[in-house]
Length: 465
Image 1 (spheres, rainbow, N blue to C red):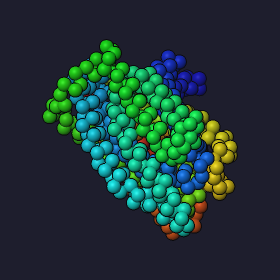
Image 2 (image 1 turned 60 degrees about the horizontal axis):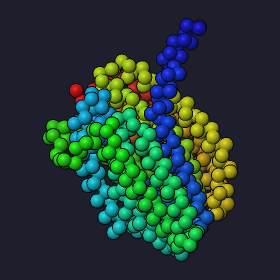
Image 3 (image 1 turned 120 degrees about the vertical axis):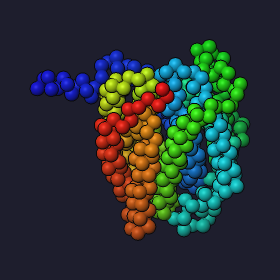
Image 4 (image 1 turned 30 degrees about the horizontal axis):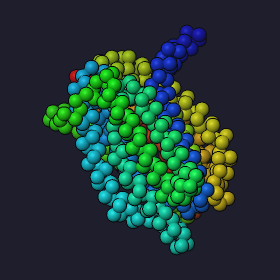
């Protein structure tokens, strides 16, 4: 019995040194993510003090921006798979080519996105207001959202640059610089929000526009800090000569393109699925949109904990595969997945505890607060499941199994949860919390498939040798 317990512990749990090594990568990412989401939470509360319509307009615009951000994330992640393995193989020229790919494709994506937001943003926002019968509320929410979206579009290039540089630094094992730059930008954003939303210290009172201006400024500050340090510090020599040419060797470009574009499309369709969920919930009216926004703001803070562990899995396992340490990668991955579930369980329990208190911070209706509380409780119960799903996703992605990640991620979303949300929102009178829980339950099957694929070791592959 004791021997059996020892084998279980050895297989599923690491040593103190193991967790310290993981935390050295995950903790700075988690701190930055948590801090970012926490400040977003405070920003959200500040906007929420202005009223339900202002908060709903900003929430809808952020949902649209979310699609663009995940397109960028997908492109960066696709190049990042190669970056991690090039770092493992000590091939810095390969790293530079991967960075150039991130920049070129990313610039193409944001050009298209900015044009869509500026010229068709109002039409996109209106899609989320179909459930509201009060035309005056619809028009005001639309105006708040579109004004916010046009200003936020100015900050998208800054977001791209910070993502390209920060992701590359993390893939090379440097997590402190992105964290410091992110925290600096976040503090700037918070201070400017306080000044520009409410007009304190003789600053103009700009409302939702002030929130957008503060975010845009903070994004360029973050990008500027990271880029300056990356190009001036000797230890980041893989950035040296980055802009001498933007030419990428044809064979390598094809290999990265083959991995990155499907991954980018996966993130695009996944984000569109998430936006579709919000649109389905919005059929229950403005209070449903407000309640979801309140809940989602707190949920994102909790999610950032296990998402950081997932990022660590991609970095650690990618390096091991790039160094041809496949057996070690398999053993390490099992321990990391268990650790991710543990982190998700703790975060989920905290969500449930906070759920009745957090919505009270908002100047909104009792109905919106009630919806938010129930959504937070539901997500708290499901957080360990999503931690497992996230860990499985990064494991499969680390070995370049892009097609499989698409099948188990965005394709699954459109075949299962999206139809469930769409049908139930149109053909039943289910409340928003019941709709939300129905969608979350569907991810159980997705996790089972992920576990099976990981056990089959389909992801154990060196893609840069």
